[in-house]
Image (cartoon, rainbow, N blue to C red; front, side, top):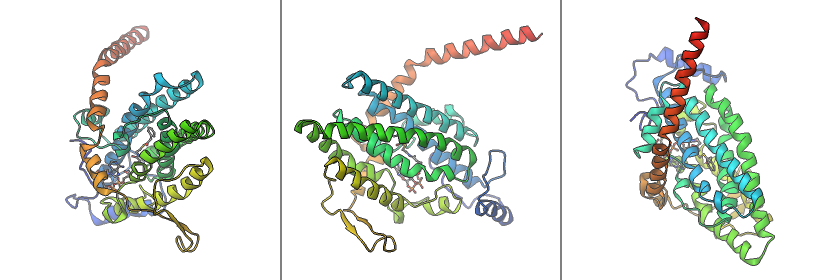
Length: 332
Ligand code: FAQ
């Protein structure tokens, strides 16, 4: 395995305390770390792990929506969905490139994804059962992704931070197109509104899980926050997402499927916030460990796409080689 399981500073490095302190001082001074800069092995491994998982999420994340391109209800919806899915593929590619600056190859990361050993976001192991799911994915999944990723634009590692700026701009557009689908359904017939509510019911809790385990169970947060890879804890971002989204659900006239959701003025130093019901962490870990409804199918589809595309990669490589030879001949 190239990127999974390589977690944080492992204590076995030969890096001196002086080196680690000097690196931390750069981080504390908000300097960006660039690929050729010296860095602790744990920092490099943490980034390879997180960026790799993030890239895989974008790639697998194309599948639940790709599933609906042929069934979108109008040409306009089809075009928007097609463009969105293409954007997600692009995000995966920027992120694989960012990970490559840390010494891992795209082939290695692809191999890991296809052999089932790589992690990607749990949310993509849930099925998309109706057209309303395309609205809910854009609104909620992209909404959660933005909440998590805006702080990553300030990540200490330059290539990741820069990739995230473009990714976030596109995710914002995705979120709006998803919300607009929900709005249209909610202003439509009773059956359409029910379909929107059903999508919210099924995707709400898995979206909250996207932010990762409770802070107390988050193995990497403390070190990642010290290195300013992460700027906020999993729970802090989840709470921000809930606060923003509950109001959007109210505007749609939909009910968030959490009977324990309650505003509490005393939270966040008196600014207020929502208390929410218990997240089913057993389900979260089951899905993360490969036993979600769609885990097997997602990887099988990805593998089929990779195998079916072999001739395209071979043709592109052959063409590049021909071009190289042609250029060399002209130059000679
Ligand atoms: N699913 O110690 P922490 C998108 C794992 S992109 C699966 O808290 P960390 C765009 C975690 O890897 C969505 N596994 O870990 C889109 C670790 O396992 P490990 C993806 C999860 O890294 C929209 C273990 O649990 N976004 O949606 C999940 O500090 C629509 C312990 O957790 C990113 O990847 C999970 N949800 O914090 C595309 C953003 N959560 O490696 C298409 C960047 C945790 O020890 C359509 N990533 N785990 O075996 C991050 O911000 C972080 O990696 C977290 C987790 C916050 C996800």
